[in-house]
Image (cartoon, rainbow, N blue to C red):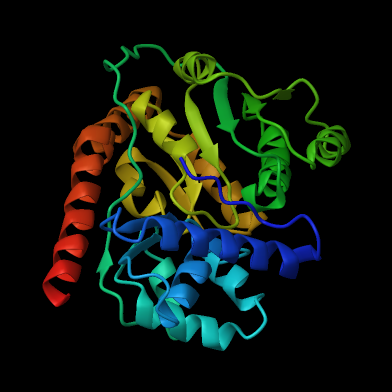
Length: 325
């Protein structure tokens, strides 16, 4: 392990300079130690590497996996960097491969001129446990969400969409597991909308407890304004839960009508319509959609398959780089 140390002075600029110098020291000390660099996210690590490659300090081939599309995602971060047009050109020239966990990231990258690196489409992976036996759906639909209480996740939209469903007589319970700066505002929204006794907030819990809670739920909801590839949704699908989600270019591209319900993002009306469709789905169909979600996990997202695909990508990039040298 080599610890990269950004400076604690000088604000964002100082942090970035310190980080880049730290990466430069790593590249100089271990120039021949590595075959390829994998960067999760299009952030400071990638920008440091392409700058160092441009001046000849670093020679490693670079594989990048952007983690968020649209909204305040990776490309938006790059646009916020002074001189971002130059940084985009450096990324386009000095990155050897880009893996897309979210199809919408491709359009984001092309919009800022990053088109040269070859693209792969390897999703996030998850460890697969023995399939649970789901035989009963509760009288009231048990909805569950896990994650960070932030605007990106669209929980304010979900609460607003649940209010008309409650007025129309739909019976449900929504459990929210996680922490974040919007908890107070969301709690007040629950009270204002009259959702008390229907929506419950819980602190973050361990992965084992998360799976236990998923096994005692009926539907996982993901009302995000934008996403990458939601690990929370993968965990729910692994537990044989159908997914109600928005079109964010990530997990929604796999869901379809057979494994859940999908609607447009950032729209209370669209979420309300999707919730109505879910509430009116018969229990047998609900269980069938959960089974399909589990099958998708086994076929497309099992950790063994995803790890092998990533290893193949890294080996291919390293081999191509050696051949060019």
